[in-house]
Image: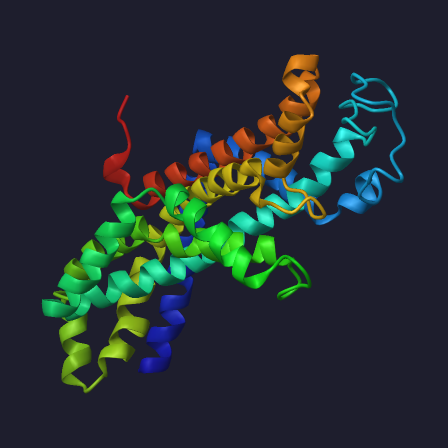
Amino acid sequence: MSKSIVQHSLPGRGRALQSFLRKFVGHGGAQVGLVCLVFFLVVSAMPTVLVGPLQTAINATGDFLAPPSSGHLLGTDEVGRDVLNLVVHGARISLTIALLATVISLLVGTAIGMMAGYYGGRVEVWLMRLTDFFFFMPSFVLALVITPVVLEVMGRGGEILGFRPSLFVIIVVIGMTSWAFVARIVRSQTLSLKERTFIDRARVVGSSNLSIMVKHILPNLVPQIAANGALVVAGAIYVETSLSFLGLGDPLQPSWGTLLSQAQRAGAASAGAWWYLGAPGVCVLTVSLSFVLIGNALDDTFNPRRRVIP
């Protein structure tokens, strides 16, 4: 009997997935966001193949602040490095930092939100007071205060999990300061889910609280987590760009924010070198907008009541 139920449920899940993908891909915002995002992911996956190794002041091939030309499509920087080369290599750093920071943020926010919503009482009160602090205090401000202090303690030499300390600290700090938004949403959904009949049945058969949260509540939270996770990535990109622009990035592993910082210090604006500032700036805006469009499309697909009826 149970075997036949499973066999019948699998086609049903397949149809549901196909229906979701059809609605999501048919969303205009999702189409634009996915095209832009796939382009940047491909670029960040093989920068050396596309533009060669990362150029430095030693192996720079152009003149100082040369405008775009056939030899340098996006011009050069203050030491003659090809800006296209720097932007393509910076894509990998910026996207890696944003995605890893988002993973940390989602893990922390989901765990705190589920525990607050499920246990209630004093656990909820204390966890939500902590969440309120991080929610009302801008993550950029917290990151700006914490990052230089941690870097001073750790130093900038060596590597941590394949990252230089400055980048590793930025990833952790952004992830640990931008989870409050996710926690509040997960808590509200958990409060509703824990009153459902299937949760009562799980308690009756003796499932532990941890088992109920992981096996029964968490799967129902995935749509909300995915939709808001895309928005968290966009915020993480902005925070990373801002921190790097203020000089907390790593010039040996330049991100888009680091390039903007270097352009500002080189006087690109006053020298009229618009390509030096414009190239990384447009990339930051385009990728952030792509994630926002994807997040909104996911939210509209998962929550049909949010759609605007023409």
